[in-house]
Length: 312
Ligand code: ADP
Ligand code: TRP
Image 1: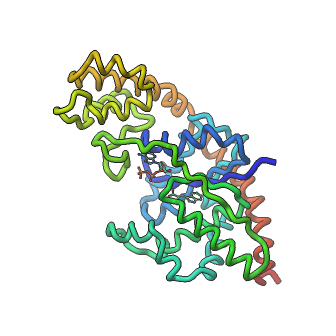
Image 2: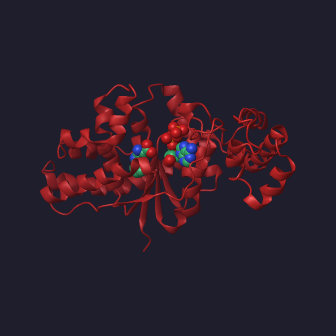
């Protein structure tokens, strides 16, 4: 029996190379070793995004990206959070079990509030919706970046509290922290992130890729433009790059052009595949995923309702 893997991601904008190496590729490389669930966390993203046109476009974009990278809908359950109402229902039940001081300790919440983001009740309760996502499916493994580790701990706490109050119901999940995954630097040398506006788009056209690469910040004092090299290493081995960088010492323009070409060669087939996937294809995949996810979630919730006493 394969272990069950569950991951979620927020549909929050144009995907970039950081998302590819940090989240999409690790999933695409390993999902077949597990019984895998891939959920688009549209209700989570409502804590930051209040634009229906953008939300719709982002959901389509994220599913398209996974399909373009070769994730097969017959081998993973790909669905959207809002399509399975048991998620918000179970989140409410967990909210009645955990305390305000416990949720107050969440780093992600504190960081966001420190950045000036409005502390809505939704942002505060975010970890309990995520706990519901994970626990509805008797998940064994949750692959996430280090920033989400605490949220998986919170899911364990929710499972534990429920089990203690109402009897064994939920499996305690384990996080799989993607520590060996490199942090991809952006064009300014900081972590690539849409909030820093330093990204290279994953499905960008050649001109966009070239423009982004040409804008990579270079320090004229060194012989090797480190920011260019750091990104180049993701596409070619250090041995392959050695002679290129040796023969073009100080010639940043040539090195950037070589990098832009290597990224274009890497992106082009993925971009073409992505373009062949229509909105209808995405809707079909999500409808199929909804059926499979809902069957499991509904059966779990029937048990929960019985145990807490709302089923008469
Ligand atoms: P952004 O920082 O652009 O807002 P998200 O926080 O939405 O990106 O990240 C979505 C996924 O992509 C997460 O799993 C995150 O760990 C991964 N990711 C984002 N940026 C990078 C990066 N620069 N390097 C590696 N992984 C990244
Ligand atoms: N909170 C996660 C993030 O921002 C996304 C997410 C929602 C998730 N539900 C999940 C991740 C369940 C793993 C499991 O990255």
